[in-house]
Image 1 (cartoon, helix red, strand yellow):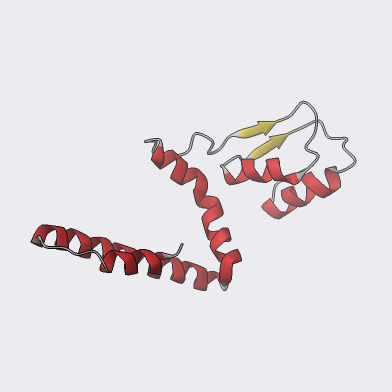
Image 2 (cartoon, rainbow, N blue to C red; image 1 turned 45 degrees about the horizontal axis):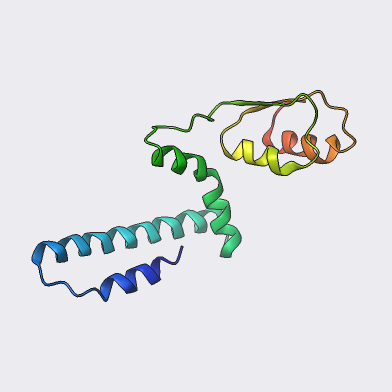
Length: 128
């Protein structure tokens, strides 16, 4: 996230007005709070490094997009993904799950179902 770079740049801004200084100080406090919360969330999971950050960000992508669009929650929360064929690779399925899909309907029969569908269903605790 490079919050330290943002905070360092913000501290270098020359402010001559009291209210601008107050606003900048509040922004710096918010950056510090965000950094502490993020660090605590990753430490609680025992994860470190880039992988930990990506794991923390992934489930929040849909919520962030919804907020940016002025929605309270993503429209994809609780959705169902359906295909009239099959899912040959896991990337599309994983993107749907990250966006909030809770079920997958597909006819099956792909030679890769055991690699793509079944492990994800087992990991998520969904019945086959």
